[in-house]
Length: 452
Image (cartoon, rainbow, N blue to C red; front, top):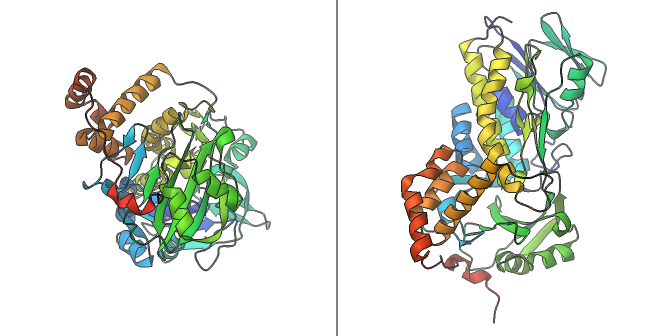
């Protein structure tokens, strides 16, 4: 395919990864058609094609930067729609070895419901020149036709295009379509710790509750955890997390009982004093799955894969939409520079550079759980032991360890930062002389302490 002149681009799927890709492709007078199988709601409402749509969603800081680069002004637009900015430096976080420090400046994330996120961004992308979003359009086939692609729809029609971007998520049919076209199958890597979570929305949080949110981290020792985050409309999403036989139930009474099992009473107290809004929503499709399409030797020109269709992470780590936004930036750069022979293979390889770090983090952590199938490799085990050491330092007031872990988690720095000599010296000193006093439970949670 020549990179000269406008392209016809089809994006399969109008979830966030698809919308990011459409925004990236809307340059150089390209025509972009987004094909979405759902009939999309006119207001921010959950939909069938996003099974995790009622669960908490945050954009890691790297994702915020990517979004602003992709569509300037997006952060302010989301804030105007009701998104809540959360400074993670002040977020009460009970980690594996105790409470992490608060009261220092950290990376900002935006917290909002997934339906609102999609609604705001879909409206923004639909207004871009050359972009059309077709709803109720289920793709059933994908075939190469001369130098173009023929995208077959369930209604019998066909869309001809120069470039196809599969953003159809975990349910992607691309492996089937490739097999039908005689293309070699990609290796697939999977890690599943059997995590499940349940979420309920609440209003009217207790007076005096001053925290920006609460995280009770699930660990291999506790097997359970939870999170509470503010969202638009002065409401809160309260989520319970567990793995294997410890996954939270769907019924309201069981959900509230589960919250009482957590290692701190904050979430149970928040749910007890606030007003529930709606039912409990459960999600259990949390396995990590990575398709190694970059390894397929006969990969066809003009076909790309992004988002969960390429690499799906355990959603509990909040990495997926940030990775999709970063992939979209790479797509925009490639299209703006002009395309030449072999560009799709090169771009898929670049996507692996975006995927590799969050994949390593999520799978290494999940493999620590007894409910996971498989074992950590020796490098993963050694890295895990070291990051646990850093977590212990952070829980005992080492702000350097805390800052480095946060920087890597938000995809703002290389994992090499974890091995700074000063951290090694601090770890050795702690082993010899002790870790010092543990960080106290944040005072902002005092309103969520059970009465004596």
